[in-house]
Image 1 (cartoon, each protein chain N blue to C red):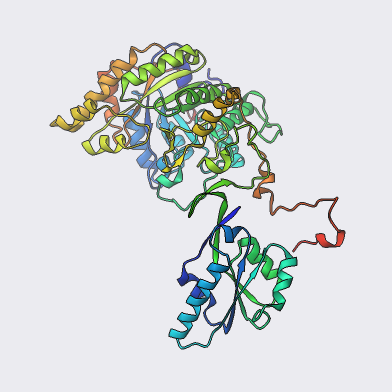
Image 2: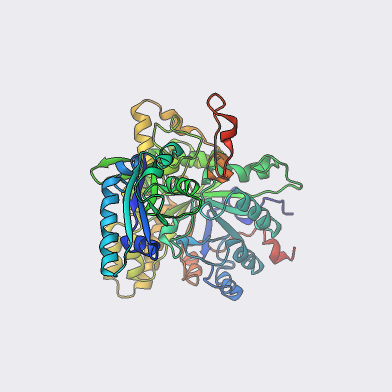
Amino acid sequence: MIVAEQKKMDEILRSIRGYRSVAVVACGTCVAVSMSGGEKEALKIASIIRHRAKLDGLDTRVTVTSAIRQCDMEFLDELDDAPGMVDSDCVLSLGCGAGVQFMVEKYPYKVVVPGLNTTFLGVNRAPGYWTEMCQGCGNCVLERTGGICPVSRCCKSHFNGPCGGSSGGKCEIDPDIGCAWQMIYDRLKRIGQEDRLLDINEARDWRTSRDGGPRGHIRADIVVAEDTQRE
Amino acid sequence: MSEAGYTNLRRVLENGHFSFTAEIGPPMSGSAENVREKARKLKGYADAANITDNQTAIVRMSSIAAGYIASCEGVEPVIQMTCRDRNRIALQSDLLGAYSLGLRNVLILSGDHQSFGNHQASKNVYDVDSVQFLDGARRMAREGVFMGGSKLKDPVDFFLGTTANPFADPEELQLIRLEKKIRAGAKFVQTQGIYDVEKFRRWMKLVRERGIHERAYIIAGVVVNKTQKSIEMTAVVPGMDIPEHIIGRMRAAEKKDEEGVNIALDLIGEIRTIEGIAGVHVMAIGWESIVATIAERAGMLPRPVFERPCAFRGE
């Protein structure tokens, strides 16, 4: 899932300062699961904004609404009917970066500000603990590396083994980070694929990653031609 | 007559001499005089000197610029190039630039992560890793093609090297990676600074069992510490095992700098006897003046001279 964390309240309050009617919009998918931008968090943020407005003697109107997914126009269209949405002059989106930007496309004349920092594609390891597993590089090598990603989990994104900073299974830059290549080594041995460690993995083609410019795909079997215009 | 990729270091090694190299850390300034001064202290005492590439991710004068200045002083440089700061376009461009200045020894390494340096907010590039860059550099020299596939207009050649850390984990995979670096193009290997000779001896046994020493020159790194603080700081570097008896020697010593030299000399003496070692690489960063003393007391003088740097010859 996409993992995000809430921005500091001070930063949120600064970005909405001066607006008369703020619509806080939660997102019900990834960020709800990573407990940063779901409805529960939206209610909490709204109440802090109201409280602060009151202390400042302001008459800010704050409403809370939620989209099932902010990255899907179908669900954003449903927001039109939500109380306070149409009249709001500022939308505080608790979606990931994609959600915030799609909200901008949905409401081109409203100010839309982010309530979260989108952090990574990752997993939930324990309550309140998420770690990165994927960078969406667009050219998956997991079949070669025993299912452990060197792009996202090695601090230097090495493709041919560990650097000299691997010690006792840990990465030299942070003892909380496991050395991805130690994990790849252990795993390939366990599944009898240690021969893969001998392969020289050639320099990558990063065009599939963000380095080729913003990415998009079109599925010919699904697409309706007039819908493929990109902003 | 010198040929393109024939450097002094390469000839020393190929002629079966036990190589003796040192290191120059470029300054945190644009002072050419600073580099010249360091180079003058090494001239005649070392076969070549590594010019570090923003080591520990601290911004310093570029290794190629400093290497050229050193070569003008008559010290052959080994240009260090890390994969941390440059993508393949910049790395290959800098290789051509180094070649044009007559700098032909190139040591390719991953580079210390930027979180150790003074620009922690910087991007970490790693477009290619050190194996991939070695492969690219070798193909430029041997096949005359760039990594992107197009042809070089004129040939280039390099004496390519890399690093190895005998104390890093996992041991077997580190050796596999070293072999990959050699397959990719490395002809010489400089190790991390050795303090734990017993552990290093065991590592060299594995190196010999795999025949690695027959495919590349293995040069052992020796750090010279001047102070108690410097040895203690070295000891906390991950993967740097300094046995307690060595730290103890330094602690007990009245004159720390003298003891630091004695420790380095003892290490060189022990390392020399290990089968498969082709030379020692002395790292006395910030203490270049001690290299001559170490060379002399270790019995490394006089140094054989096969080539003088192009810039020094006035080419």
